[in-house]
Image (cartoon, rainbow, N blue to C red):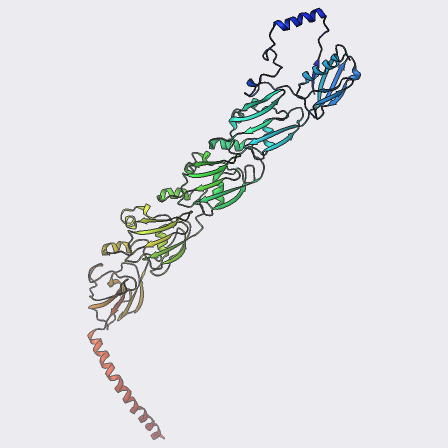
Length: 605
């Protein structure tokens, strides 16, 4: 209960009154500085720092007060300040007390009783029994701006931070260093108080958390720049949004599943809503995402758009978690893409907590000079199959160009691995072509040439205009060549038919794989038939010398679908010819032998 006592001045003689009147003419009127209880001039009352001492309570409609009047206690009574700001007192009638402090109201009541000559020398004491609810306004960067009614909690009046909590908490775009409180003043313009609530968060200075008065208006301005560090402090503040609610956001660009999402806000079951959590919700970043230039588009409480560029690279090193910006309702996140990136960078991104799940397969296409062109579903541990047989898709590693080629059965000997193309569409539908040189990978170990693939890529392996036999051998031994090729060895060999041999296998080894020559074989030479990509057929007779090494002109490396024909020796040919001639005579002879056998049977009987 707040009490205020008023003791009126004593009656003075007319002579003294005259002297005072003369003094009033001779002296200037007292200034507001000499009477601190009076209101300051309007021009000095516009802008001020937080008050070091709470201002006295002022009465208004709805206050319940106890008026004690001495020496006539019958005039004492409980009074509620009416809607028009007045109280009705016994004998004195209606008196306006709205906007007055308790001391000013006690003085006004005493003056009324004295001026009406109802009482002489009244002593008036006013106590505040029940203060009226406070009606305040909140606008700016607040989740639920508007008008609010607040009541006193115990003996304490509500503070500005309690009002911010009631209005749903501040947004991430709030500028807590420039909070403004507009307070109505009796008989003059409103007082504007600047408050630095960031000081309250950082130092615990409670002087900035001032107590509110009826009619106060709080304005939270928009920050001109978004500071990631301040954003986390704002998110942890007691007057931030601590309700378990959901916020609507959008994620676009280089993520696995772009689109709108609803995620838990700060204080919700998922904890503080940050940019990395939003990216996880969207399936994670794609491998070609540029996480150094992530953009957040945010609408402020004033309807203006703010754009913040965030570098998420430090998060991968654990150096600066401040870059993991706290989100608010309506935020839009855009992750741009990069044209090139080395394997080290991509491996780091793949290991990020907000990267896409690598166990999910990629849908790609492989065309051109591969044994099995077409669409494939592939991950990172693809294995090359035999020529013409798709390799295994595998899983668990980074899907690269060479692994995609492996799944497609490997490159053909006439492939131009210096001009392999990756045809890609980015998240906005733009087409781009990335040319890589796998020969550099084979010769110099340049792993950057083995580019990471992403969803929807098409790998094109062109045809070489010139074929170098030395390079063909190196390509045949590469990991992205097939494990085996198929060669048809027919004729005078032990196991005539299709044999599977490693790429770059010479002719001699293919014959030995088929079991070697039979006794009827023409062992000095064989015939090699090769089907060329242009549809023509090459046919050569090559001498056989098992003492020759590989890659010699007479012992060339074989290619897929080659046909090796082992002919008959001269003796075998003559024998086969004689058999061909004698075979009909034997059939004629058999016509005579059969009836003779029947005649012999009848003779025995």
